[in-house]
Image 1 (tube, rainbow, N blue to C red):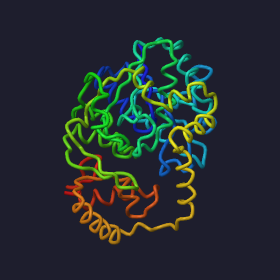
Image 2 (cartoon, one colour):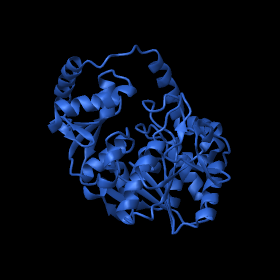
Image 3 (cartoon, rainbow, N blue to C red):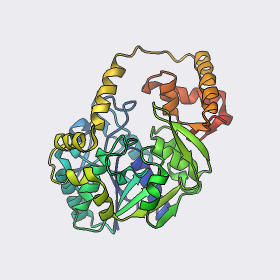
Image 4 (cartoon, rainbow, N blue to C red):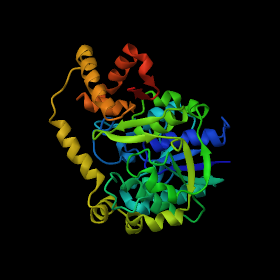
Length: 362
């Protein structure tokens, strides 16, 4: 009795998939297979774009086209990945989406998984809802991963339920943009639902899934995220999960329709430039090149706490109540490798401000 959950954009979607599986089904000995990208932020993986099987050692074959990522798998330097640690801390099987053969390749992986496991259900899960974007929205930043999985799932000869968790929390489409597109309420996460992933939230860099868990735990206000400082409302809609008709989503998502016949990632990326005006992998390439030229900054506690006070005073004036450690790391001009050291410093010196996994400003 296997369930299959496709983490639409990888990263935090895989963590949310584990939380959803536990919340809806709960059986310790019957966890879903989670199919997900190894496509992490540059603070985890300094190499732009998604990873494929050749970027890991220790993967285990599931089908001819699908490999699972066990706890003892390792990314081959210089790349990085959160998946082995997820596999070590969660009871799920994490299977690797390889997008390098375009939609055709992901569709083949899905076909093989369905044939191998005969799953009782297939869910496509997206945190935030940018999978419902048309492609021309000015706030849209990372449509390609979601479009690839949406297109591939639409080709599968089996029913797929599309779920959107935490509508608006990724800062790409607002809740107002999404409200009319959301279908029935499937679940509302509670603080208890976050317990199975509580250890993950202490180190995983996903901002959207972090806010999803924080709102489930009762956090409300405005959270500032990313290097650009996007303000995200933390509302009662934050911890919700809605079903959306997959065919309707495909009809709306111009990029997903345009890449349906692709068999290479480069093709899909070129089409993204045409449809959306950009590729998020280009953004990663440009940012990686910029980061490479930045001088190393030491983490001096006194300096950091002084700079933090200045940032928080300015953030309060903007009406901000919370922020993420990713945002703080970038505001303080620290490197991604210093994020965990920063988190430990702040929690040890001002523990009352830690609203896990967010930092409370007011």
